[in-house]
Image (cartoon, rainbow, N blue to C red; front, side, top):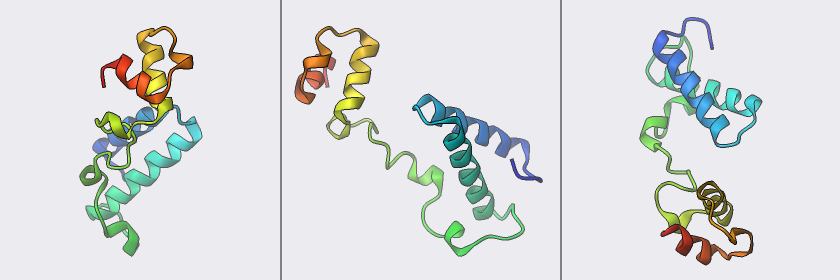
Length: 109
């Protein structure tokens, strides 16, 4: 975490980092993503001494809220790999030979 960050930004950083790791991201990549996100949020809210124009334009992370997430609640946007992982978690037999549509049907999507 950058110097001068408060407890809120520290919690935000840890949350983002843990979330990335849970999604299968390497620790190094999750750390980088969390730091960049927190630094951008600090720049947007005026908590940093300097801010680039790209840090202050566009939607904030909270406004985007997972727009780019593949499994953002709509199963038609999920990949076959996403569906396969969910089927594996649920213990659905025959999942390795199922098509994407069959996986959706087996999962009730």
